[in-house]
Amino acid sequence: MAYSIEPIGIVHSPYKEKFAVPRQPGLVPSARCEVILQGEANSLEAVRGIEQFSHVWLLFLFDQNLKAGWRPTVRPPRLGGNERIGVFASRATFRPNGIGMSAVKLKGVRHHNGQVIIDVGGTDLVDGTPIVDIKPYIPYSDSLPNALGGFASEQPPIFDVQFSEHAQQQLRGKQADYHRAVITEVLAQDPRPAYKKGKPDNKVYAVNLFNFNIHFMVTEPIVTVISIDTINQ
Amino acid sequence: MAYSIEPIGIVHSPYKEKFAVPRQPGLVPSARCEVILQGEANSLEAVRGIEQFSHVWLLFLFDQNLKAGWRPTVRPPRLGGNERIGVFASRATFRPNGIGMSAVKLKGVRHHNGQVIIDVGGTDLVDGTPIVDIKPYIPYSDSLPNALGGFASEQPPIFDVQFSEHAQQQLRGKQADYHRAVITEVLAQDPRPAYKKGKPDNKVYAVNLFNFNIHFMVTEPIVTVISIDTINQ
Image (cartoon, rainbow over all chains, first blue to last red; front, side, top):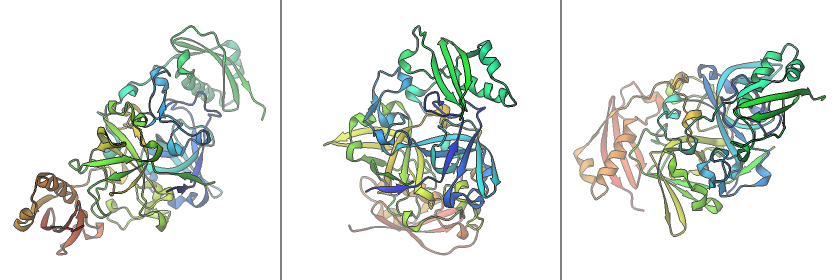
C-alpha cells in the first residue's frame, strides 16, 4: 500500500549541488540555513513553543535521487567506496522512500510578511531540499551516547584549508568573513570521492557554493583553494 | 508536489491498540518486537552489516491517525493535556505526513524461509505499524546529550505495579515471566489520559496487550492489575 506525503517546507542553504555537501549535519556550523514553511504548515501556530528546544530533527527527501531508485546494497564513502553493505546499514541517500533525517541546532524563528522562517545551524542539505517534518530533539530518548556506531564510529578527519592569494582577493564585500568560514569548513571535510583519498591527486575540483564557483586541489592533509569566481545569475 | 512512499516492513509488537503504548521507545525494554521486512526490502543483502550497530532508527507511519488529518497546534500529555503548542514543537502522532521516528536497540537479524526478521528492543509502536525506513544510529551525529529538551526534558515518572492474587493466578505458562515483565513496564508509565493524573481516580481501565485483556486501577503512585483475561482469537 502506498502513502502520499507532501513537503511542509523547503531548505535554503549555501549548497547549490550535492558535491561537497557535508556528510553529516554539524560539520559546517558556520553555514546559515533556513527552513521556509509552506502551505498550511506556514503558520506561527505550528511552531509555537519550538524555541524551548535547542535542537530539532529535520526529516527531508533526497529529491534529486528519487528517480534513480535504490539497490539492496551500497558502497559508503567511509569504507573507501569499494565495500558493499546493506542500504539499511547505511545512511546512503539512494534508499527506499528517500527520506533523510538530520539533527540541527535551532537558532530561531522569524516571521516576515506572512512567511515563517526557521533558522537552523549548519545542515547537510542541498538548497531547495523538501522538508517533510520537523520534530523537537528530545535528549532523554534521542541521545544514546554509548551506542556503537559501527564503521561510522569516528568523526571523519578534518583537513587544513589554505586560500591562494588570488582566491583571497576574490573574497570581498561585507559577507567575506562569513563566506570564508563556510568555504573552509566545507572543504576541510575533503569532499572528493572516496577512491581518490590516500593517493597522490593533481586534479583540480570545482564546486558551487553560494553564488561562487570554487576551484580547489587536495594534497593531503591540505586543501588549497585556487579561485573563487562569482557566478552571474 | 506530492511524493509516494511505500512501507518496507511492518512491526510485530505486544501493543494491540494505541492506549498504553509507551510514549517513547526504551521505556518497556522487556518487550520483544520484530520488524518483518517486505517486498524488495525483504532481502538479507539490504541489512548486510547492520549488526555492527547497537541501535537503529525506525521511521514509521502513524497509520491509524492519517485519515484524521492534523492541526497546527496540539496538547501534549506532558503539559497536562490542556496547553496548546505547535505540532512541530511536539512529537504528536497527528502531524503532517504522519511520519514517526524511534531509536531502538538492535538485538539481531534472523532469516526463516525467505523472511528477514529484525529483532529490536522495546519499541513504542503498535502491532502492525508500517515501517518506511531503517537507518543505523550514528552516535557522533545523532547523540546530542546536552540538547535542551524543553517541556520534555525529564523522563516521565515511573509508578509501582502490583498484581492482584487473581491476576497473578491468571498469568501461567512458559511465557508468564516475560508477560509479567512487559505488563509491569507498560503500566508503570501510567498510560491514563493526562487529565486524570494527580487526582483521585476510581475508574477501572482496560488495555489489550499480547492476547490479554487487562484491567487495572491507579492510586498514584501505585498501579494495581485486577485481572488478565485471555482473549480467544
